Image 1 (tube, helix red, strand yellow):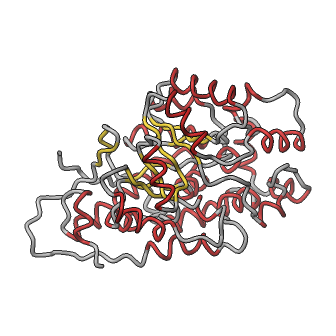
Image 2 (image 1 turned 180 degrees about the horizontal axis):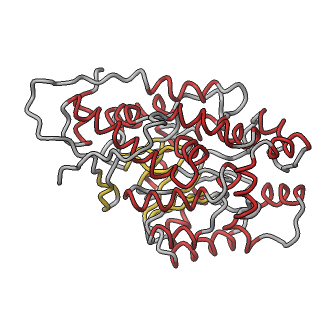
Amino acid sequence: MSKQVPVVKYNTSYPSIEDLRNKARRKIPKFAFEYLDGGCNEDVNLYKNTAEIREVELAPYYLSKHKGSSLQTELFGHVYDAPFGIAPVGLQGLIWPNSPQILAKAAKDHNIPFILSTVTTADIETISQITEGRAWYQLYHPAEDAVRDDILKRLEAAQYPVLVLLSDVPSFGFRPRDIRNGLAMPPRMTLKNILQIMTRPEWALKTLKYGTPNFATLKPYMPKGLNMKQLGLFMNRTFAGRLNADKIAPIRDKWKGKIVVKGIATEADTEMCMKLGVDGIIVSNHGGRQLDAGQSAIKSMHPIIDRYKGKIKIMMDSGLRSGPDVARVMASGADFTFMGRSFMYSVAALGDEGGNHVIAMLKTQLQQVMEQVCCEQIYDLPKHIIK
């Protein structure tokens, strides 16, 4: 494996995710920022996710021989340039217009995975073209098999290599900010929201340029002319119900590529995924947006790693906000990591430059940790963890 030259081309005015978050708060309407930033209920798990990642400590071996560090990471037969990717985020175009396209292009240029959500604002075909067939797709399982099968056919035609099945949204999360702002289902636009838009002219002009955000992938399945209330009822009806073995099994039979189940938090669900022939899992609690009374993602991951490491690909998202966080999670045994909010803060803050900036910044931060602890390969990070 070749050694990698650190990437340093990022905007030095924003050298941390927190800097980007603060800039994003000033750039986009309050309802859009709170949709991105918030968790569910009292945000307990939102904050635990990051705090408990940062309890992990690494040991530096300063006197060991060190030939340089590589961030390259193999996953499902592809060697990526870093051990992190872009997690799926719903309604990205609401947060910043054209943001899924911006991030997909940056992911392709930096050779990291981008996961497109069923409920975001760019369609399957557009993102496939931008990424040259390298994007992954996260499926909210439809209630109707015909819709599921048509989406799978579109994904196969667009050459998506990995299908991600979402398991942790059997019901929409109870998110007080979104309820107050009218972004629950069904959504509504309030006078307060309109006034917020008027104070964010750049966001408003970009939205006029790219059009009102919509569920682009789902347009072929939607009746025309839905008002906001009807749209909410359509979404509730179309994606009602939980993922289970009976729904995964026929997808495994139909889908020729890799299958990953996202939202796994227990050994029992991991065992079921293995029995169903799933290739990987993403340990996740949806960024603290679904179950406030649950564990942090990293605490859920520990027993899964202990029992199933090497038997199935184990990835993690929820709570990562820096290169050191990626190092901590990889040192804990993960095969790969994903981040959602971190990338969206950067695009909301810096627009078209946000994708390249945040990937370059995270690579640089992670490279510094690797060099500091004298770790040459990503796979060797577990040797540095302090139990």
